[in-house]
Image 1 (spheres, rainbow, N blue to C red):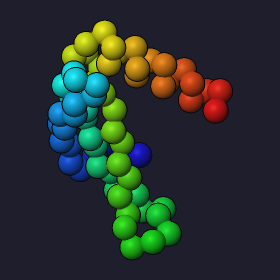
Image 2: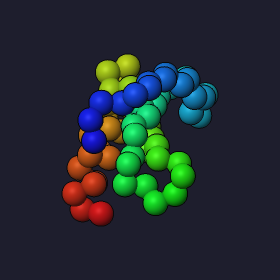
Image 3: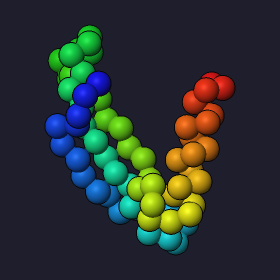
Image 4: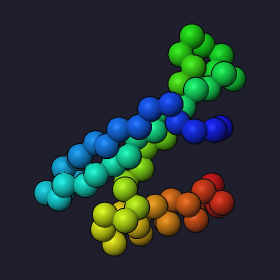
Length: 65
């Protein structure tokens, strides 16, 4: 998919804890409508053990979905 054309950090209150999320925006030329953007959002990997664990769990579960 290539490199994102834009990236943002979002801070979200998750059950009383502030969690930083990374939001990447990619061009998606294969989209069938007028909006040709793919958005990838994830907790920042190394901000906390919980974020790291969430990312690993999501990665592993993607093989079994």
